[in-house]
Image 1 (cartoon, rainbow, N blue to C red):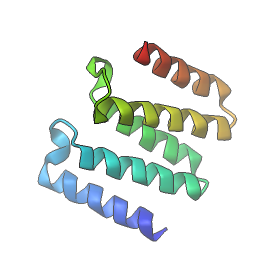
Image 2 (image 1 turned 90 degrees about the horizontal axis):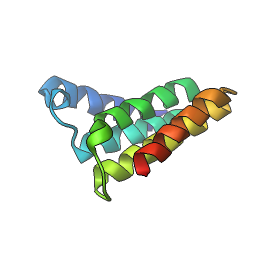
Image 3 (image 1 turned 30 degrees about the vertical axis):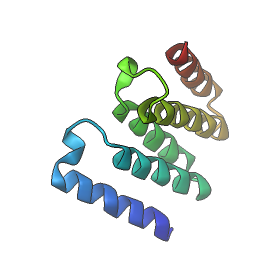
Length: 106
């Protein structure tokens, strides 16, 4: 729980500084991924899924390709979001998320 509080505080500081209104940085995405992982460990799968989807969206959308940190983080975020959907019993959402990831990677 303490780690989650630290990630939330870090994200709020980034938001206050205006950094989240610009293109995402690796630091921001690492914070969002860390928050999602903490939420997963706390079995808060709905919140974790939304956090991972937010991270994915901040990674640059459909225009990001290749093996850079944006692409790798986006793929990880989508796969973790799909896992959270499965844990919630929402298989349709999980499959759609995985299909979106596969389409993105092709």
